[in-house]
Every structure is written in structure tokens, then in C-alpha cells.
Amino acid sequence: MERSAQEGKKDEINRTTANGNEKAVDSNSISKSFGSNTVLKDIDLHLKKNENLVVMGRSGSGKSVLLKCVVGLVTPDSGSLTVLGKDLQELEDHELNELRRKVGYLFQGGALYDAMTVRENMAFPLKRIPDRPSKSEIQDKVEEALDSVGLIESIDKMPSELSGGMKKRIALARTLILEPEIMLYDEPTTGLDIITSKEISNLMLEMQEKHGISSITVTHDLSCARITSNRICILRDGNFIAEGKYEELENSENKEVNSFFKN
Image 1 (tube, rainbow, N blue to C red):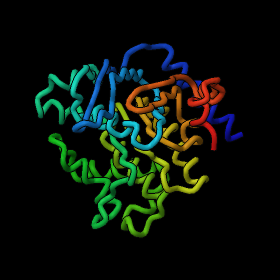
Image 2 (image 1 turned 135 degrees about the vertical axis):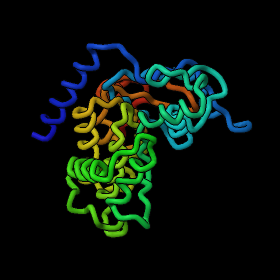
Image 3 (image 1 turned 120 degrees about the vertical axis):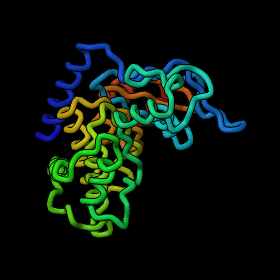
């Protein structure tokens, strides 16, 4: 039953994605080097609206650098990169900051502030935006976001009182509280047990369906990739070497591609 429900959600998302070609992210031949180390080589990345693209690759293949380029934390050395219709290289600082509000970034460790309660962690991003909501509006948004991930009862706890899975859920809720149009997930299930990993993966899929979010997920977790992906790209040595649906790549006759899907 669990598998059937997941497939039903993905089928609905795939139908929505197939009905439109509008791109949330569009890059053409972007490259990035750090000194003599070339991390990305002529990457073409195309993310449709309401699509979840999973990027897989071995450690050091450039996956996290690619995410940082999309959010404007790293500037490509060459090529063009458009996010939500905006060419990042043409944006002034204030325009880039405004665009970043529409791009949520879930860091690998969750990045909760240890000295703040869950309530304070959740409210923090809302207090930093120019059109800051009122105190009551912030409270409502915090409670609504926590309720959406099933953790409203943890609102006054400290991060040290939470399990790894709870921290991930709250970090996801905090990222979604600004209502981003794009989500970037950097190894969202790393360090979690199998059951909790599946719960987080299903939650990502639910948030995509509920909010119509476009997502790029970097992961080594095959279960996460299978559950969440509409499409997968395999990155090796700074280049995409394969692209397709999970089942297509899992059954690929290319031994290198197929090796990514072996436990």
C-alpha cells in the first residue's frame, strides 16, 4: 500500500510536469574551478516547474557546488544560469537576495541554532525579511509550518532534545516557512535510520505536491532517490553522464550508470 500511494503521488506530479515546459532553473554550459581543480564542466541543467530532479554522484563529483551555484552562493566561471527567469549574473546584490527568498536550501546537517528553541528557530527567517510579518502572524506561520511536519508539540523544545529525524523535519519546516518556489536538498536523509529516511523522503514528496515546489535533491540514498525523483541525473567528474527515470537508469546496460543503483 505504501508503494502504491507513493506511485500515485508521483504520477500526479509527473502529469503536472508534463503539461508545462516552463523552467524553474536553466543552465547552459556552466563551469566552475577552484584553483587547478575543475569541479563543474559545461553543465546543462534544466529543472521544470513542479519537478523533483535528483542528482547522484560519487563524493567530490561537484553535486554540492552545483546547488550553491543555483542559489547564488558560488558564481560559475563561465556559461549562463537562469533561476525563475532571472539571469544570476545580471542581478544586483539586492535583487539576488530577493531571489534567494524564493529558493529554499536544506543543508545536510539541518543547521538549527542550538541556543534557540524550535519556536525561535522557526521565527528567525521571518524576522529577517523586509516585509516582516506581525508578531501574531509569525506565531501563526510557525505553528502552521510545524503542524505540517507533525511536530507542533515540539515548539518549545531545544534542538538538543530532538532526534535526528525531528531536526530534519523542523529544518524542512523552517525552510518552507518563507514559501519558496524552489527547494534545494543537500543529502536530506544522511545519518538517519532506514525508517526515518523513508519518512523524510515521503515528506519531501508531500511538500512538493502540496506547495507545487520545484526541487533539486543531491543524495546517495537510493530509497530517497526512488521515492522523490521525477528524473535523475548522474554526475561524474563534473559532467552529467546519464539522465532518466529511476527504473531506466537502474536497468541501464551501462555498467558505470548501473553501479550507482547497487547496494
